[in-house]
Length: 291
Length: 132
View 1 (cartoon, rainbow over the protein chains, first blue to last red):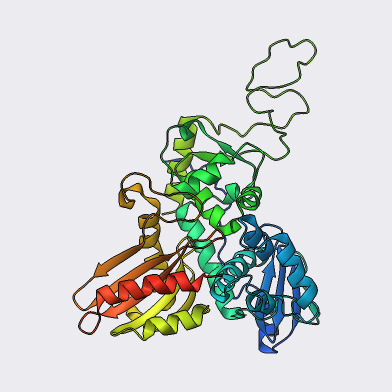
View 2 (tube, chains in turn brown, red; view 1 turned 135 degrees about the vertical axis):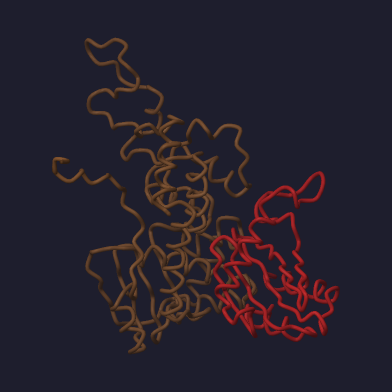
């Protein structure tokens, strides 16, 4: 007879993107129903509502509309400031920008909608922190292209699934990023190349988005593709620039210690991020888990 | 200088136009839609068209010979044409002065549609959409 032992230990799995079945924020749906005006504050940022529709979204994880428009000179800082002074109080900054000929209506709508859905993705991200809503006046931009709450929630869920389908491991979303040994000589697309050029072991996807003046979700898409290709990996938090590659303080008694072992008090380097065998195994595991 | 909705309505005035959309090819988001869509689902059509547009926009195989401009937001491809038994799909990239990845998608009935005319008009609309 086969002896009945203890059940085998549970195999380790990693945390994966969770896709809830219902709405993303019950409070948001309720506010939409009552056609509320004001600002919803969540851990990831803010959604501005006007009569139950979303008119603006902002998150520290991604550049705002002003940053996107100024990054490549579509608007200059003076133009933006003047619009704010002239029309901020009337909450018609968007209309003022169009009417004064600083930007075309289509261009403003495209950039605004892109920024709104982008920020909303981060605002509506998973969080257990309390949510608050302040009833009040509409946002200073004014109505440019209001978005129904249901459409915003649907798109946010679709975006989570999109990232998950590209590469199921979310750790590269907010960790400092490092290039792997596979990154040299790889052909990447121009937009991925711009992201890859800014990876230095310190910057996160959000930092790179700010530096590019690009919506952060767009950067996440490229980051996940690059991670799936094994070209980049998540580094470790709290590592200062230059500490990778063994630029470390010599500790007393250990003149030349193993560069794989960090000196005391120093943050650990990313485990095996550069080992092609380990990355291959991880990729295999992720692919199997995604089945 | 029209907004997204005016631009889409203008596209619908083309002979044979069945539906039109403005789509972001990185995320697959439909920023605006009008008329019909294959299968009746604009969001799904946008996501699928975005996949195709992304491949065309990002791979060097479809860029012009020599000095293709990959800088900023200049997409080396102007448009994509797909023909099937009963319709055409025309995807026109929209150049913007800020970082974006946007295209216009026109669905055209093959019998009534005039592909050459639609191609010219859609190019003009893409330019006007972001003027200013």
